[in-house]
Amino acid sequence: MERRIKAPKRLQGTLNPPGDKSISHRAAILAALAQGRSTIANFLYGEDCLATLHCLEALGVAVRAEALPGGPAFANAPDAPPLGSKAGRRGTSSEPSRPDSVELEKGPLTVEGVGWSGLQESAQVLDCANSGTSMRLLAGLLSGQPFLSVLTGDASLRIRPMKRVVEPLRRMGARIWGRQGGSLAPLAIYGGELSGIDYHLPVASAQVKSALILAALFARGETVLQEPVPTRDHTERLLTAMGAELAVADGRIQVQPLAGALSPLHLKVPGDISAAAYFLVAAAIHPDADILIHRVGMNPTRTGIVDALRLMGADVAVLNESTQGGEPVADIQVRSSSLKAITVGGEMIPRLIDEVPVLAVAAAVAQGKTVIRDAEELRVKESDRIATTAGELRRLGARVEELPDGLAIEGGHKLRGAPCRSHGDHRLAMALAVAALAAEGETTIADAEAVAVSYPRFWEELDRLSGASRELP
Image (cartoon, rainbow, N blue to C red; front, side, top):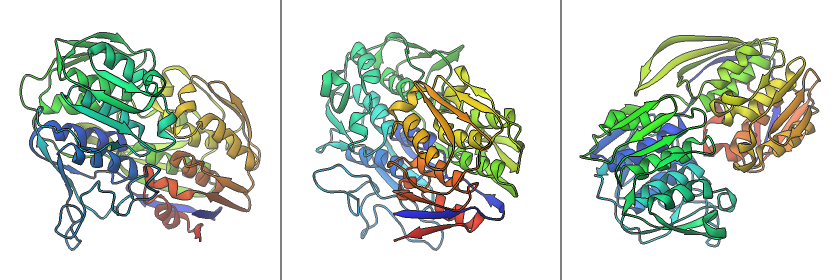
């Protein structure tokens, strides 16, 4: 699918971003370990999170997307396949495919927790599709289970690095096999009989940290993890709310093995700040824009994009701050702004790692040279986001230099519409859409359906706020 986009005369309106993807993954996995039924409102029914649900179902966990009033039931009804079933999924039998996203009219997710010892060996390979979060977190969970599991994914996921999670899990006692010595998926895991470790994470990675925390719940003795810089702490917050014994201070996480049942979750997932970021930047770079985004998660480990935009001079207001599901939330209003270049690196990078492509778009419009460093992690995402972001923005006339660990963008040069492609990367597709809103002429984006991984209604929201985006057959 391609999308055509022309710069609209005005961007205006309000929106509710989808539920936070990181929290949705974690809430579903932890709810599966709880004793009893959990209810998760505003769950993100995007392709990545559906991959997690499919794997949980294969492990014996019942999940269901409740229907909103007047709407049809989606999962586990007599005439409907389970949430994660392969019915209607894209791809062929020779290539693991991504589960189709479902309509966001679906209501809360219910998860029937099986308790900390209730997971069952799957009779099938667990297909994580394109979701690195699913594979790494499930690797940690399954390392504590006394049975065999095999994790795979699509072609993109099978070349993403897994050694960073496999190596410490092996140190804990898990038996894990994979391609290139366990560096690449598919991964075969025979878990159980784990021991706690004291481990300093060499790379700032919330996925690796969360995988090790999940494994630590099933280990003998305490596990101590030290982060090089703080990363998103949703796993720690959720587990603390469920009754697990964790202590967190100064980048040090101490995890005790489970001594009893985890309490079920009953929460509403905050809006995803990574999804909101596209419209934050869109409003800031457009000459006539005013957008209000409701109930955005404002976890301080995730708000780097807000801080960066403010440093660039964006007119950003954070309003109505409160707490939702154990996480800080707020409304964010952004208006047209005159942006200036900044330098980004160090501890800010983990707080905006997913937003770097759209931050580069803001930098292309800003006056001066923006430099983004310490972001080499982007090389091993759904695409090499340093290379693909630089290459695609250059198609639009941006002056972008690719650095080994980031980007240098000479801003202030007029963007011009051109044919672009997403490289199958949801974040790049949305970043290019934002760039097109500030470009002269028409931009086309190939493989635009990639947005369904994290923001199934992105194009609909863009149409509503701008009226500028059209689908091509």
